[in-house]
Image (tube, rainbow, N blue to C red; front, side):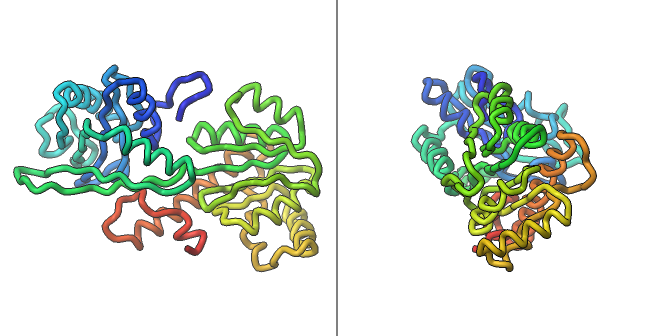
Length: 333
């Protein structure tokens, strides 16, 4: 993800936007994909790095053991203009690079990915649709080409609706964690403070409790409501509960949540939908500081994502760990 100051995050899960920008500028780029694991690996199959001929790079393929070696290998592949499959760890020609527990990984260095292919994938993701890259490679001494299918899902979007320090901190934490973040708030100081420190953040002012703006919520969206004045949340929750959001959390005590549910039922919300609300929001309770509350909410969102991913891994055959859309598990599609 590109920061508001024009720099790219190094340790990103999604690297094609960086590769797209560098190709548009006329630079050559290698896309490095983890296509095989023997033993354990800190990264899932399909993890990627993008390396520019200038030596710039983003993404990561280990816990920090091999990234510099990968950059060097990618620069050599770019210079020679040839794809290659390289093994690291057990059985590798690079005896000085050892992986934990004696494991091994194989990486495909692709220097022939076309700008059109990468732009098509990036465009689909910007439109909130999944996309696929087919990475060709040859293993061992054979000549039969194989294809690794790398599935990309849209970046997780977090909608934060609320007021005050916890809402601001949650936006910041989520942005640092690679989420696409949008703040909805009726409070000008809250909006202003976030924009002061995160000028690229999308902020939407709320005007009245009974009038909700048009909000795009899909099954790759989490929603967190952090209001102390709970009259602001009723219409919003009614809208979110009718959406495909995979997580809906709301701040407040259990008694507050009981009154919240009563208001929603009077508004016409289906009572069967009320169990979708996580309240009090957060993986752990009792936090009294904005950072602790924000960390708890973000941890719960990540926990829900991880549960969905584990379920997808257990029920999907022949696909890598990042290929199971959240909606298959949480949206019932």
